[in-house]
Image (cartoon, rainbow, N blue to C red; front, side):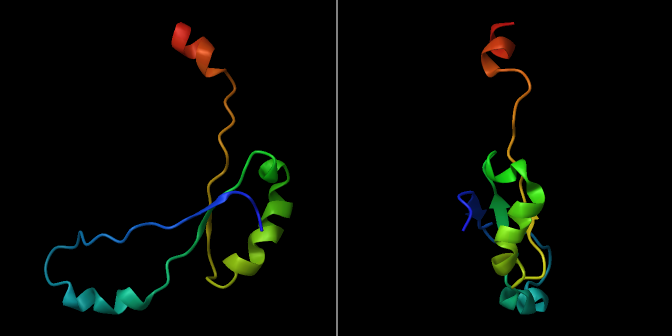
Length: 79
């Protein structure tokens, strides 16, 4: 299994009106979100192949690519 994190988003009730009409949505599984490391995401297709067994259970997933800065933070903060 990849080293990146599998995120779980907290459910919030921000709907106006009666929530009873949306009660059926409580049974829907939330799609997984993956955060691969820079090394894991060097070959995105290979990474997708590694998460496919878990992600395919949901039919959809979210991949949050790693952020690789072009300019080191020290240079930005000192200017």
